[in-house]
Image (cartoon, rainbow, N blue to C red; front, side, top):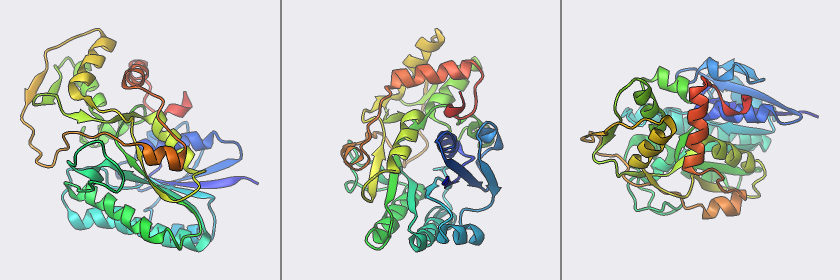
Length: 319
């Protein structure tokens, strides 16, 4: 018997990569749900799945979840622009909708794997560990922390496992259309710098490029999501590389790949809530998911830039 799996936000960057990977699994049918406010149909051209345009908290969809129509739910739908300050809108879209999905999935006993965020840690000292230093600096990070807290309240009474994945700085194929739609707001630093260089512009970084981030390749993110299908118990797990790298490192690796060096322009950071250093502690990820990252920053960027240079713009799994 074929399994049917739901991916909300499945036309978005991470969601479309997950949908592409799931569509390759034997005996699996994928339903992608997206309101297309930030997702893009072009991410799904080569993904063999059913597509439905609706909100993830649509009553008809919640009824299907409650009725047991899906073997699992991958909940990726969210407002992902961290500069949006509308508190009510952010909590309604990110937190409230998720609570509705959990209520429906509890009725049917359906496993839920959902996107949390490293934004839950704010500027707490790295390495970032689940349950420690959860001090978000903006409403986006708070909405994700609120999701984790909602999920924790369901752990004991939910018949199936609930897994939250705190994504760190994800980069890789599939984000290009997001970049086009939101004017570069939510694209990875790697794609932003690549686009600057291809336009003949020098790299631009906040002073002085020594901010550290945990950059994680999309292949590792997809593998963490697939591992969550077999997780034995509920919990929240970091999804990162486990190693922080500077923005200056990104410029250097990019320059090596393009064989073209330009002097970096440094400018003042206008965001008071900006995270200066993120680095995933992967202890719980190893224990709960049995997962660990496989791609170094150098290897991930090498493949990503090669694909960009070849004109590839969709999710990884179609190549």
